[in-house]
Length: 216
Image (cartoon, rainbow, N blue to C red; front, side, top):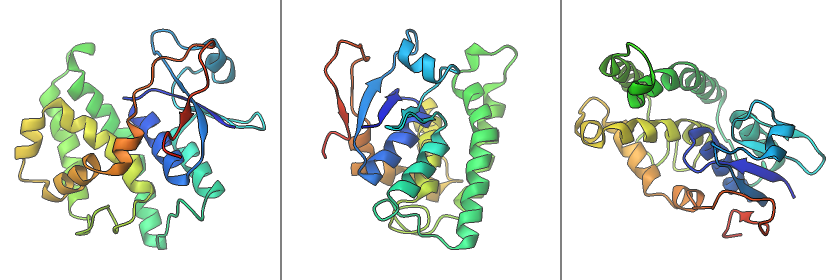
């Protein structure tokens, strides 16, 4: 059985858990305390970030997008990424923007006190500009492209969720991103999120094995 090192609130770890859940892959779940990272995790992934997936053959996947792609390849009949070439190219472009730009400004907006000489509002507005552009491309469906969840949904929505958490009243009142707001609300109310955001105590080697997903 694969072993997943995760942390509930980390957007990257959320990505991985959603992909695993959608793929109906059962893993041993080990919740990580970021203040006391397990020795067993650090030995297989010294960079010390989650998620980390240890496969049964000993291979280690320690990047969220690589875990998503592994799930798509392993369980393609269950977790399907049915997109045309233009949608696949768009998905790749947007994920790159969120990983390389949106996350940078999100951190300096949400956690401004951690940085020196940071103007939180300017970083917030940069994130908003990205969302305003994305808003124009959302279909009038439950998920981004259709009523079926795809890679773009599980890869991007955890970061938009974090952006809203920084100031929910401001986000909800903003009239520039109506489609983003609907898309996010569908996600927040989804069975997917509810069954992925499970509370686990920090893992201890002496603990009994805890499985994820818990409903399979």
